[in-house]
Length: 240
Ligand code: ATP
Image (cartoon, rainbow, N blue to C red; front, side):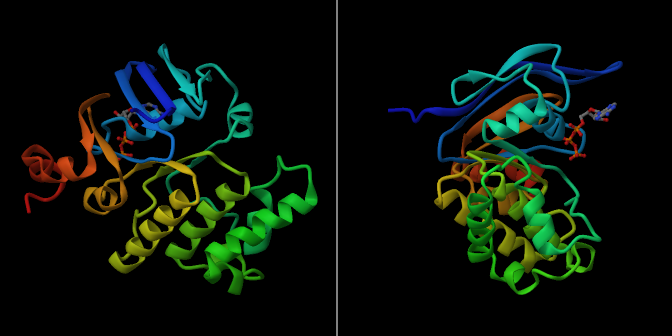
């Protein structure tokens, strides 16, 4: 019995001028899953997330979120529907405090008591941020800034979180704690689509994964199967 699809991407095409970045990309994310999106530089991973969150316009194909066609929806409407994108490069507001950064994640939340509850829930999940609530975002370590970027997304109340390269530039131990955070967020009921260059770390926490090559899904399956697939091992797991 298949779980309900949180996200269904079907036949997606994206062009940037003369660059054909996505070529009929098709994939599904089931409700409650962590799905890893692997692939080399330029394969189309970031473009996939941007097309889903309404930041780039596909020229063909559909994006369906929780049964609703959002292919041409505006980014803000997509966030309101519960689909939140944490872009690459952890863009925290460096002159604002940790607390102010988190509050900004709730700018669409009208109910102030609800906003406070959500921020407190993030602090419970991330005690390091609670200890640093008055510290300026720009003075946090790389790992802490990544946690803050994810925490800010959580304040907006996502049902599906799109994470773009959360491990980028982080030391191995810090990568492990970011992956552990993603696992805990998922355990609380948030579905995750995770773009990662670090295939090994991603496949450890993912239920399923896809490999994108040249704008389409070349391979897909349960994470354990992908991690053992000679093609994946050769190309993405350093041949180990
Ligand atoms: P990376 O891991 O390096 O971020 P990626 O798999 O996320 O790679 P994309 O960023 O989606 O790949 O890029 C897919 C293709 O589209 C690449 O050829 C890239 O050069 C091109 N591309 C991406 N954004 C733009 C843009 N704004 N204008 C023109 N071309 C773009």
